[in-house]
Image (cartoon, rainbow, N blue to C red; front, top):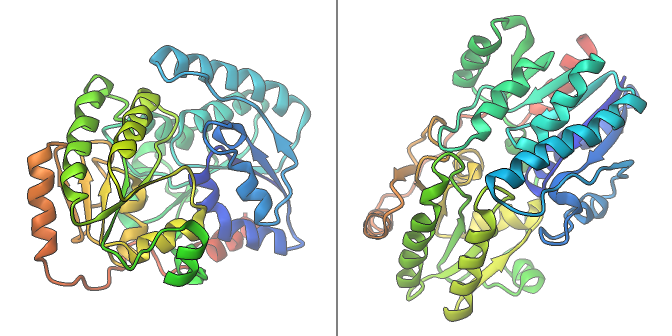
Amino acid sequence: MKIGILTSSRADFGIYLPLLHRLIADSFFETEIIAFGTHLSDRYGNTINEILDNNFEVKHRLKTLAEGDSPEDIALSIGESIKVFSSFWNTQKFDLVFALGDRYEMFAAVVAGTPFNLKFAHIAAGETTLGAIDNSYRHSISLMSDFLFVSAHDYQQRAVDIIQNSEKVFNVGALNIDNLIKADLYTLDEFRKTFNIDLDKPTILSTFHPETISYHENQEHISNLLGALGILANKYQIVITMPNSDTSGLMIRDEIEKFASKIRGVFLIESFGMKGYLSCMKYCSFLLGNTSSGFVEASFFPKYVINLGDRQKGRIVSPNIYSIPVIKDIILQTVDIIEHASPLQNLHIYGNGDASEKIVSILKQI
């Protein structure tokens, strides 16, 4: 079976890792990676190097990224991505192509393949993020896919509701948990030597992406977040992983960079790589922001999460998560609550770490 793997960013590649290892190790499959989006961007860290550093061949490299971050830029990028992938799908043949998540560039790659009757498998289907236009892209990818792999029971039912066909939907758990169970994470000393960050110190791990529906509020949001972080920097060091390529993403980047230039103990990371990011999460005091990893990966350790705003609204909210508005005073009040909260118990929501094994088994059956 010839398999294509669509990967557009550091985030989806990290999630794919256990599936990639299993597919490539199995002679039943011929697996080819299709890299595009921010992977090929200097601004976003040329994260294609993370794929190569993991000893994977990147057979296909497609340049599709928008130059700016306005709604018009994003719309033009979708159109350009469809154009690029239309030519690509016209010359490349696959038995099945994997798409993951809800990014607009992933949507463009899939929609370009539909006239060619390509078969797609959608990973992380059925999830909902009401504060991002990506929510529409995710469900559209599901409707264009032949097989849907979901990470939890609640998402399975939602995916069935979307496509009205239960035989196409499989609850396999989250590939993220496979990563965590099998991960050889850095020790504190190894992390310090690799990234020059001492996680023995109290640390906040923060990632804040734009809200792409209420994008006119992003300036106020980042001002409130950085205002709170400025106060918290008196007792925590702050590790900030930089935002995705989204509407207003460049503005948020600029504000974060100006903030970091004035405050000591703030570290800006373009891309840790999966091992580095998960290691930082393991040792940090808590997470603060609006990233999906605050819902899946953080439930594994488990870590307290302060989830800001509406970007992730609609996801399963486990007991470790505090969802609050992006308001400075409320952020500080919630940090105080977490500092006095009881230690968390283990949370098992997203499977047992065998999602990649289940996906491969299903592929062989179908």
